[in-house]
Length: 129
Image (tube, rainbow, N blue to C red; front, top):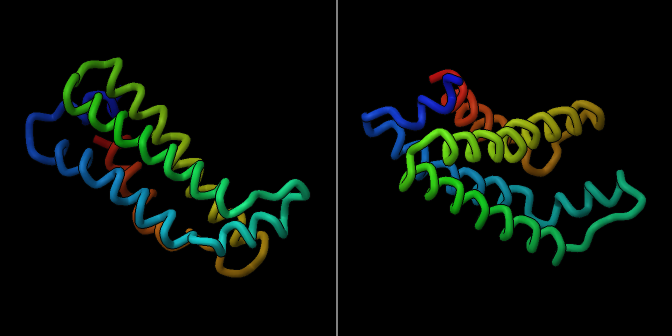
């Protein structure tokens, strides 16, 4: 799997990628802010609260940081594969969700800009290398 081996590259790209991933996530959920809760609740009958939104994002940030730390400290197939699986959910699926949501509504959806400008390139670098 190319993505797994890219994380073990001897150059500094690996370190930059591992440091950039949690930062991209923070910028993304700050763009979403409380506007995402409003959007979500307008589309899903059993909505979410602002507190739940922030709790989920803080927990996901901790998981992201742990996954990046594991990939950095123990650069083996297991750590790298776990990071790849987590980012497939967190970055790839989330970016797709935001794009589809914006297309369906034919308007901006909170989180769309960072999903496209940060999540997609980071995930592509992870998978491509």
